[in-house]
Image (tube, rainbow, N blue to C red; front, side):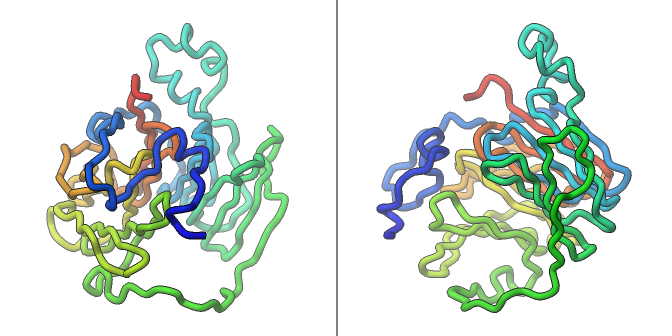
Length: 292
């Protein structure tokens, strides 16, 4: 199917098609700038926090740690904890603790997490070489119901290569835009780049995040939920850098409040909320209130 003929999914009907540089005029956005977000909740692990994921509907968050534990948190309950009018606005959410599940079945660091798009299933990857699937619909669930051991990848045809895309520096993260036209990448050179998938060209470089140049630790770049902004942590200052996704204009910094490098970030797919995971053992939930 031609990309221009692809039908819009539910998220695109709600938020718009996202980033598209082919429009002659820049669309207006109601999305808040990243510097306007505030910490709504903080959860802690017993070791460095390195992974996180939002459910497709934005109602749940999962975090994973070097201590091999996984937490699943309810977004409404996190918001209720930081809301002075929580009893009136979130009567059901106030009753329970934000952490609704704690899962233990890996033997090493949790490296990646993903929610199933339809079922109450969380999939996790770990340095123990296993991929596990958890059915969190059961309140007593602690262990995975299925384990896949990763031995080797299946060879496939490479359809596109971006050689030395970060000037020889290690590539830390890659992310598709919602329409599939672009790839957002970050590297240890502290630069975030937007690539056109069809041509392999770098269209935009988002610079200025590395206040000391090349960074020591890998970090993830991300779009906000409307793809109007690109976000990336500055390792030296532990602050969030943000740019206009279409023209790379720098936005105000946001202090992330962590005491260690921010190694992973993920934004909600449908609301002004994101999670930061740090080597200070904490995951911080960020939210911008009164924005639709």
